[in-house]
Structure formats: structure tokens, C-alpha cells
Length: 130
Image 1: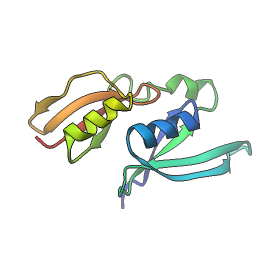
Image 2: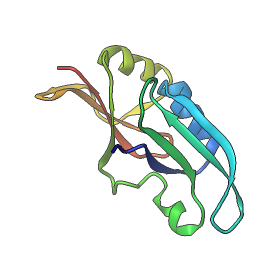
Image 3: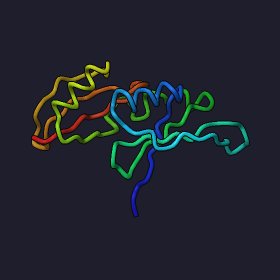
Image 4: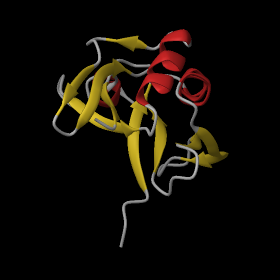
């Protein structure tokens, strides 16, 4: 048993793809036309870190309730955690790509960490070895 996907509600598929692929270095695993449960067109968009099994389903907000969740899926908390082998290289590449960090890198017992915002404003931890 494993978690295969986690959904992340976004406001625009292409802007989200650009962020995850270009700024974070994820792979675009799937981008297919699909239909909502009631037959309206949508896309099935999956991104994942290179070599990872678990990915993110980028789900465009559909309706007012979902639109209200964009950027606040975790109620202002860090809700996603990106583990990297080389913290400094990842941090510097992400800063150069325009990723907004809301904390400076620091060292904790579990490793190096800095909080960044994704394309819609959700908080993530960038985590590296101590």
C-alpha cells in the first residue's frame, strides 16, 4: 500500500505546471484531457519529483468553495515537505527561479529547513540533511 497522489487545488493548470517543472524541477508525468463527474472538460495533470513514486495531482479549482481553498489548503501551516539531498544547491536554484522563501534557512535536529510558497501561496518546507 502507498499514497500515489495528493491533490493540490490551483487556479491555473499551465501556471502551476510552469512552477513545479521549471522552478522546482519536478517532472510532468501526465497532462491529459478528462471530464468532471458531471461531464465538463478538465485536465488530469500530475507532477512529481524526478524518480519519485508519489506525485501531486494539480486540480484546477471548480466553483466558489474550491476557489476559496486555493493557496490556503493547509490553513496557513506548512502542509507539504520537499526533501532534497543537496539543500544549498536546491535552495539557490529555487531562489534564482523566483521561488518566494518566507524564512531563512536554518538547522534543526531533523536537518536544514526553509519555508517557501508554491505558485498559489501554500507553505512548503524545503528539507535537507543536517
